[in-house]
Image (cartoon, rainbow, N blue to C red; front, side, top):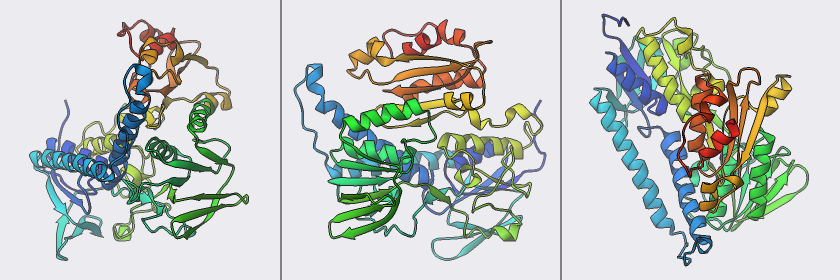
Length: 460
């Protein structure tokens, strides 16, 4: 039996993104009195201003790419011009519908929504500054910080929102780029490369390392690089941007190795910084590290009744992780499973995806990390070129790779490159999380013809 507090817990959450929303609804269902303070968009600025619109634009680009190769599938080619205004209207519609849905859900759980900016006046007292300048005070037994992050802008980048852009200036940009220079080859950078190229822009990617996606499997990165080059993307490998100069309608990016990239736009995709300033964390005695709020396995800060989640916590910056953190915080704060170690989040088992074309997804132990640790693993790989559904889709790019324990057959991790990789990785994520074996996957009766059959073949 789970025992809940007899006295109502007063919880104040600052930040209405995935972590804050998940925490609010879970805590409210468990009997807490919840106040949620958000200064921008209920649903999360990073989520609704970054993640959702970027994926919506990628979907438009994918549709355009598909239509352009329709002749190979027996169809006459149809118009594929991008209508910037129609695209903008579509993005705003999606964002509006999602925010409305989130607000309705929170209201249905009797969560009090406060539009404003929250800050500490003490460890148990929060002040919200409202849009009209007035203030409201809230006393709290539990405080949850989930204020997210924003794009990092170095001093040498003269961002103007027109030709020199951060990611948030590009949904969509005011003028569709003729030639965009993307600075940063991590997850966000490669997604923008794909998105703009698929919409008809020329693209140059400045890669500071010797491969794109430096934190990913080298074979996965190579497959993506090969596809970029096939599509005409220019790669400046081993180059770091050191300055950006705008000359009228031209943007010039100077690199530290002397190379120069010229285009109509430059886009920065070089990380983010936490939104912790203005919270007056000192008043609550909260320790920080580079602006982040360090947390333990229960997401507690150094002040036990104050939690941090999402990007602010400095843990894995994924919306799915933030959502899980929010739920776990609510359960812990309300006295559920507080001493059960298996309820803690295992960040090493979080699945992630990159919405390029082909998509890239992975989960669990990476092959390169296993070898670096001297760990014995079994690696099996099946290309989509042998898969019937991939051929039907006219898209045989990519592969499925499964990493397992050679002694027990337990699935330790995996990578997928190909169409719908972000959906397919869920199978491997369930296997990794629940210590399933390759036999469990192989013995499952999957639908034919599907891309998922490649998972069974790789597990064989």
